[in-house]
Amino acid sequence: MAAYLIVDLDVKDQNGFEEYRRAVGPTIAQHGGKAIVRNGRFEVLEGNWTPKSVVVLEFPSMDALKRWYNSAEYKPLIAKRQSAAVANLVAVEGL
Image (cartoon, rainbow, N blue to C red; front, side):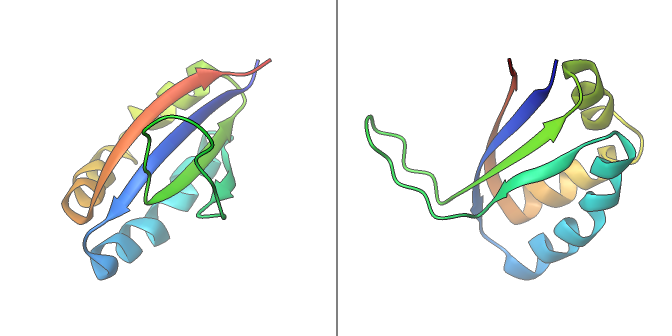
């Protein structure tokens, strides 16, 4: 069953985040993941959620998603992302 990482992202340091963005793609692909939404136009229809931008990554399974998130390749990039942006991440299984 596919799993999705939904990211609510507020970039504070554009240059630092660009370094992260260039480095993260190959780590996602290594674990079978791909971006399916990256900063597309969005509209809040209900509620108080006010994201600056939204990213959605798709992985083959929740296990694959967690292997990527906890991988040696991604670990150092977490600190890079956190220093360049504020983010909320949620992992959810699909149908």
